[in-house]
Length: 424
Ligand code: HAM
Image (cartoon, rainbow, N blue to C red; front, side, top):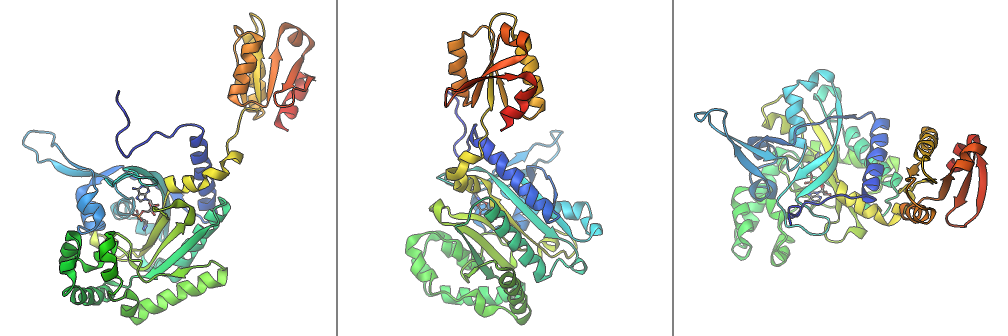
């Protein structure tokens, strides 16, 4: 038997209803904050992620699905392509390619699959879905303002609250600008020198190439050493410090609670200044429901003009998982199962179903070859609230027997009253 590839999965009903519910709720919120949708390709040139996300990150060094796409002619050189492990680099590439700075401040969102070769476990997949947003534009359009950071975080708080997810924590940090980072990296390098020999092979590599990435280490034995390392908060220059203060001030003003975490550096190299994660207690080990931050130098790193930006991505799989318990109210079952009774009644039943569905009644349609008992079984299996019998007598009388499957109560309802009765 051929099965879905390890780390990928099928989303089946009724869960798909939950996914649709989430997507429609987030689209509503995006609309209220004046975000518009962008769709970028699912694969890009490998170089985009190497330059954008960073060679030393786990994502680029270990987790990408890359292949060489053959040239059209034997003589053409192949191009290395990669299934996108994230969508920020793609959006910034599109920003540059389409000169979106002409539009001033761009507020873009996306919903779609991403791919990382991680070890699969609960809440971690190799194909997973992100709902993300990016605010990007020239500094003259206000893209650098702490007001944008605060607005984005407030939108996320609103979104999670609206979905009924209230056990969240916003972890907030500033990772400073490139100069702060250089000083911090230097201090880390010094602090690591005498101890790195006791750390894992990855950390030994990171200590040389990109010491900041030591904070991505998950090896339990290394954690006591990592805890003694310098903190980025001690290296922020005045401008980064006051930018961060302004973000916190607005958040406090609008009543979005946050918890400061100066160990939060995020696993991608493009971050500057504000970095954040929302965690959720009920999710277990993979408790980051979303993450994001500012990336003021990313456009330039990809060959574009200066374009400060900030964004986030929600792990949709995890978001849906945290909603699963309260799912009942979202899953809409058929209001009515229409059972044609006797030969020649399929047409009458179809006409009735057409009328009801035009009134937004969820209707399931049976078949005239079913005996009444089988129709009742099918109606129960479909989870319908009512069964409606469409037999010759009913059609003649233009009134139909409607039976409540839970209570067993049965009444005769004139055709014209059916939509209203069934929408109750
Ligand atoms: P990220 O932290 O790598 O950030 O991913 C964001 C979220 O995607 C995570 O918090 C998690 O919920 C979900 N996620 C990541 N990997 C997996 C996986 N293997 N299985 C299930 N869910 C996963 C980014 O991707 C940045 N592009 C976010 C961003 C946008 N920063 C600025 N703009």
